[in-house]
Amino acid sequence: MTDATPPSAGAAPLLEVKDLAVHFPVGRRGLSGRGGGVLKAVDGVSFTVYRGETLGLVGESGSGKTTVGRAVLRALEPAAGSVTLYRDDEAIDVTGLDPQDLKRVWRHMQMIFQDPYSSLNPSMTVADIIGEPLRVNGVASGSELKEQVMTIAGRCGFNVAHLNRYPHAFSGGQRQRVAIARALVLHPAFVVCDEPVSALDVSIQAQVLNLLKELQGQFGLTYLFIAHDLATVAYACDRVAVMYLGQLVEVAPTEKLYYTPLHPYTEALMSAIPVGDPDLPIRPVQLKGERPNPSDPPAGCRFHTRCRFAQDVCVAKAPPLAEFATGHYVSCHFAGDLDLKGAMDHPASTVARR
Image (tube, rainbow, N blue to C red):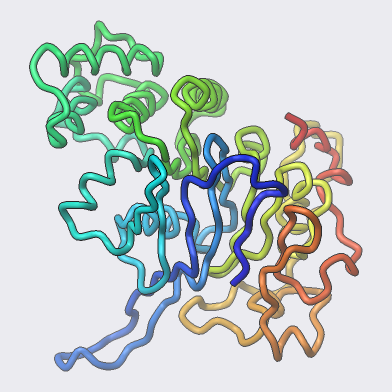
């Protein structure tokens, strides 16, 4: 599969994913371990994340977004493919590491989870939660550990006077600040943000997004930002990758993707962006049928069963993810020939203007 890279490789790559696949057994297997099927949650995904950028990963529920994020960190074991982390002119094959080496690499790769209510240990104080990565990795102890915990907590906007309290004493926004501090206390280079604001009140989401952008500038962080809220992605991300049924269908700089989508699925996502004015009509692109079963995906283009432009070639042959314009990759046999509407035609047309 063609690698989805930005228009110009001015920045050095930090993470390179090639042909990543994650499969799960489904159905009854019996005592013999045979039978049942395989759900291909991620099936041949390739992309590059460049230093200092935020790459968004979007798609409907069940498209494989979170599975990609976890497989990149090897929180889930890939069935195939490779993940390469570039550190100090060294290319580290993350998928080939043994547990001890993987533990050392995890210092440079961290994750912010979606739900701040379930991702924090309720029996630990905030100070212990933030400091745990330092203790586990033998980075700091005693007064030095306490100082580092206070420093990162303060950077994340958390009141250091409350570090000895337990998670239940805080709001969702404050808990997510704790989760961010825990992820950043080791000063990683790469962070997977798995829908980091979706569980928060709308009034708090903007604060957390601004905090993530501020911390990115301070620490030189690189993000893989997984989300389903397209307005959030437009604000937070430099490039966006669209997933459908375990595969990438389009990758482009944010404004190009929002205003000039080349894939019919991306068009449907753009048309569904909520409108802030109740007097303005919403005219979403209606997709026919239901999303196919990922354990038995359609032949050819996986989107052809719901695409109003589908033709015989879409059923017979899967389109590759190929570069249609500079930095704009799409998996569609008729890219550029279709009359698609993007956010430019949407009433909320300022969504991707950051």
